[in-house]
Image (cartoon, rainbow, N blue to C red; front, side, top):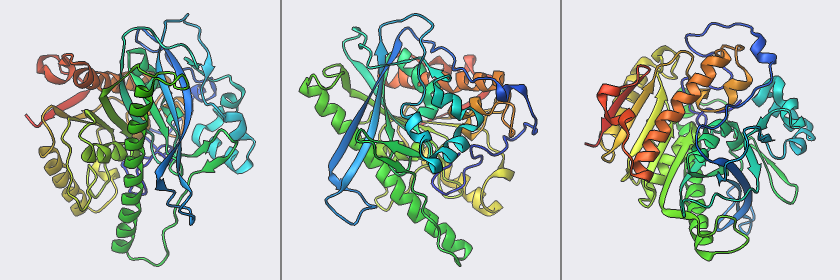
Length: 419
């Protein structure tokens, strides 16, 4: 399970023990994971698109005529359906399972429940190709990026809940940064795990990781900007081949991501002021910086929500001096961002780096993960802050959860920036 940020160790990786929760066994681990029903008024539709960026060569190919290609899944509001919707959780699971090496990786990602995903016993609340809801006329858009070595389908709970509240979510499967991507012609492209050269000193290892991280972040950010351009063009084309033609509000687009995906979103926002807001879910690169640092010195011009679990310094990567410098740099970065930004630290029991994804549902009560009730509670906590921020910045609504200190959440610390 590779939810960590691009080789720079984040405080807790998926699969490692969650701080504060002792290792234990539980019957939860054998029970079939069930996603909670989305809390909004819409049902959820989904459609996948295969897009090729003709302006960008594939950096892993020697042939410059081979261009960057992506699978992008649009999750969108659909007319309200009965409560017993049982859609596919992971499209293409059977094809992945048929590849022995990939089957092993998927069992590592989803544990003992991978066969149940393949069989369809684990379900979502999503209808493939459903009709889009007729109102409102246009939907705000969130472009979502997954963690390194993960997949956007691992964030189904978060995505479905946002969509049920009236957002379109364009979830990118970042080729080579995704655990695996299946294209319509049957090709499956696996995660590319670059190997660090041997014999490097500690300083050289850190330098190598940062160079690798920078290349990956730059590509992820370029993916986000490409997807935004595609959505804008297809929305204007009114093509019958694009299910949401004319229905997207391309003036209300945010970038959001978890872990490495949070860094992708932050870098895209540094470069593109047309993105109206940025949601970075625990994407800090310890011990270097909380937000991406590039030679151009670009900073965000739009509001940021940096949403993190409370981290124990003893479990963070780096020396004491490096960690202290990381926090100094982090505060410096936050002081420089746009008005209406927030740093929110979540403190609920068992919350950790993987808690933004569905992964804790599949390992509840084992390997240091909390019991299922705590997992669900943490999902709702994350969703509440994400929704409040997006509702404020894309919907023009008030956000007392973020702005009203008299209604402060007991399990969160909210620090406002850019006043």
